Each structure stands twice: as structure tokens, then as C-alpha cells.
Length: 123
Image 1 (cartoon, one colour):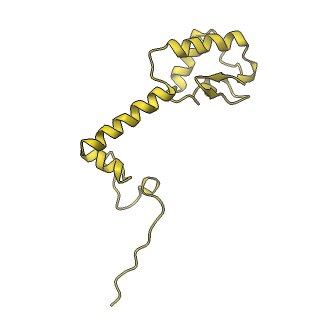
Image 2 (cartoon, rainbow, N blue to C red):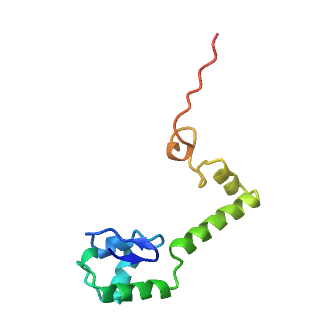
């Protein structure tokens, strides 16, 4: 099992897809890291040698991208700042509503949670 940046990469997956389990690395950047480390794209996570893992670890630690904990902290602080200045986006985050202008009369179930049925007014 390969461990990079505190993340255990899944076994028996191609290395490009395994690297996407690290927060902040998508498929495109994973493929670039693999090319820089001179690892074959067909290599599975289990088949990586210790030397290749060390090269990959050094590349990830020395890159200029915010990855894993730093990126999560950065995003969390941005949301916290929006809440503190009491802007519209901050209020939407605080109330667990969609932030980017999506409709909420219907849909938005994943953000708002399960339906809460309100009974109609009796005559």
C-alpha cells in the first residue's frame, strides 16, 4: 500500500486514478505527476516500487499546489470569512442552502436534506 501526503492510496487501481484520492489532485494533474515521475500510466498502485513512491512523494511535497490539509483549511477559512462578514453567500452557507443561485422551491434536496412535509390548512 502506498501512502502519500497522509492518504492511503487504494490498492489495485491504476496510479493516475489512485492519485485522485488526494484532495486537490484531479485526473489531469495526476497524469502530469506520473509523467514527471517517469511512471508508466498502466502501472497499478500495488506494483509501484519504493523508489517510484519516493520520487512521487517528493514531487507532491515540492509542488506549488495546495493539497490535502492546506487546501481544506484554505476553503474552510474562506467560508468562515464569508460567514463573518455576513454577506449573502455566507448566509447561504450558514443556512445550508445552495450558494450559487440555484432554485430552492423544487430540487436542492442534497443541500437542504430530506423532505419535511407541511400539512395544508384545514377548512
